[in-house]
Length: 289
Length: 249
Image 1 (cartoon, rainbow over the protein chains, first blue to last red):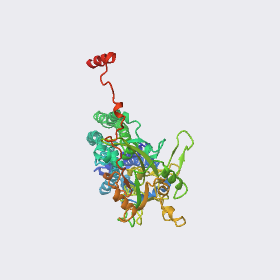
Image 2: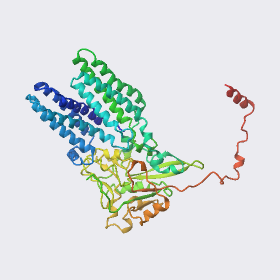
Image 3: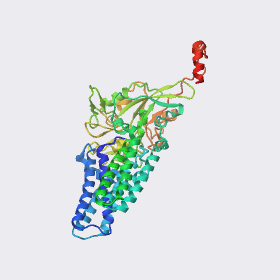
Image 4: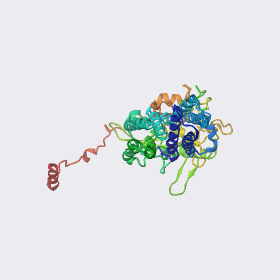
């Protein structure tokens, strides 16, 4: 799949933002006053910044409000509702905190909605049977784990962040290992795609057109896959191992910030791979993956 | 609404005969021609006369080679357009309700005025049947020529999809695949029509008729063939020495 910059930025940034909102919502002793303002401002900047970035891949942004209409069937629509609902509820929670009033149930509801939003984002990908690497429970699991990891780092929880860094890193490793086998496991081949398997072994002879097209640009993105192995090592180092080490050092403010920057960069690399390595079954028709 | 209708009145679709398709691409041209001036935004081309031409098409003809266990390779032309699935994965994913399946005849359509151009439906389709038009910024797909098949201003013989009307080999057939008595259903039953990617669970309406088995290696060898047998299997002289020496290494 084509790794669109807007989508990579969106899923990474809003994942961090909603992750922070979860931790702020379930905090038994939440910050109040100006401290609360700064924490919630960061969460909002990340979540809204991500949402704004995502709108850049729409061709008709002026009709974006219509995307709220199909929540019964569409995960994209549910994501829109989740974002609106979680930002409203946590907004109210934050407003009350500014005046020193903590309403825990409101925080819990906001945290649940923020988690649901990240889950809905992940389900947009996980629902696609056409991309076997994504069509798996581990897609929402990894998105949620990374959001909680980033949120824990942002909210300065050293122990929670360390545990989540180890957990999400291990999950990411397994997702790569298992993901490589999912296309073969899906059973979709050129033989099933063309129905020509009965009489022999089909092979794509020549494409329907000499140039490229939307399908190939969007869904048969093969550029950069040859560096995938190196990028996986870089991603894991930056998103898990390095921040895990940094968190164990003294001066949590300085090294915590470095850990956060390293983690976010690593997640960006991992998200790039999430798209670039995902093979859509339509590539089979072109003799490619 | 992107919820699918529980059932459709008719089940309109195409039957494509891979045995008779000659790969002339006339259906591709007829489709592009009709949809440049009919339903919705025209199918645009970019850099049409330049170094890197590309364009939006609703129908494309692939070519495959099939190598049987025992027999010469067969060349199959393979036209592919929207299969108007009974369970189309492209429809429920649409966030705006622009994509829908018509309850009356099962045609899958895009209401271009509601399309935000997010491209998720094209990701959900396993067949590559949907293409985003880069100049209009909306999703384009086969309409089964909905503006021809019910068009009473056209002569009756023209009230079928442009690709079917134009096919010089009669490799494309249009009709109601939900009616077992229809000509297309009878054709599918007689020729063993198949679904593409049945494991994706889309239940495509369009059916493909597999190519009939043709040549085989046995019994058709030319009378002169024995004279073409290789005469010297084991090289002698210098080549023989080289062969033996290299073999020992």
